[in-house]
Length: 197
Length: 197
DNA sequence: AATGTACTAGAATTAATATTCTAATAAATA
DNA sequence: TATTTATTAGAATATTAATTCTAGTACATT
View (cartoon, rainbow over the protein chains, first blue to last red):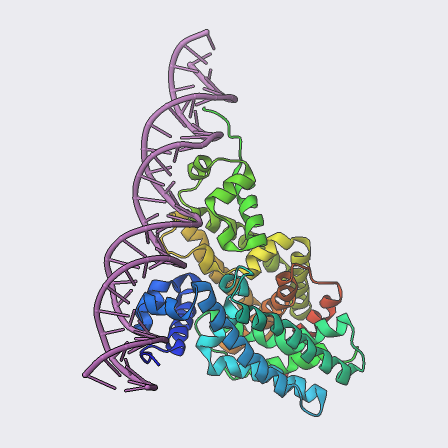
């Protein structure tokens, strides 16, 4: 049924990610994405209704993949050890996927998805992200403290997500990747934030 | 000598900051800044050679002010206690100046100053920031560990700057301000990262 | 081989914004 | 009060980038 495609969605989205990683969101113009991926502008619009939908899909792909890794890691036996492992997973992820993590950590959702009128499927995917993260943290609080309240939630968020994010960010900003030493600091900080009073 | 001005630089820059805090950098168009501040576009260009120069000045004002506070706090007697005080100063600053801290923490320098060809004075001010921060951290390393090396520098940067930044960021992103509880977590994390092995 | 259909192509159009330009205005000084 | 000049005003222009449109292309199925 019809001609087979010469340029895949993946090529397009990857090109956009590289452009953002190198020069920020504003560098990922439709013309630039076309040039980098080899696909003509017409083909971009054949696949995506708009630039915003293209960038939103890129963003959602990344976050979903990352969050899936977090969630499964935090599911370990000992909640404390699972928390540490999750924090370290996040740091390692940025080491292994510097382009993707630059996009994720250095640019804000608003820059990629400014309006609320995304194509339905994308809007649904976007709406699931935060609840899923909340559910993950809630589970942790229940297992670790035996109680879920907003202070615990914030505390867990800082220890498990915030600290590794920041630890990586300062390197990613400078075009580097967090060195191995950082892992030890992240682990300590994570444990310190979660420790009993 | 000539007509006195009706709209100050400060009004203009403040309006730009509010717009950015509310809607991101892209919301701070010259038209929007003009509307919010009351000044007509012509007046904006009378004071600033370009939008970029206007935003750069805003950014530099904020960072310089913030960094001055950091530097003087980190100068205390006991290096460890001074480090903790500095980290807490940063968190409190975001609590007291939510608009300014949103601009500083949520948006990247590149978004505000994309080119390298800023008017000379601004370029000079921009060039001083990072060295000044480095000097500050270097002094801390010398006093606390007795030795300055890149691992120490990174570690100090995480403990003193990174951790409070992240702790505030997660609230600022949601349009909130870090609650008082956060201070205790920041202090612990700061001490943990700086603790002996 | 003929035909249908998704896809490629990229030029033309539109939309949004920064910037320029020319003409008023009003305060300070002589 | 006359004059000077920084400043206000905002319409006109230029620029940049998204989006649309029309035509061609090649694969898959019949």
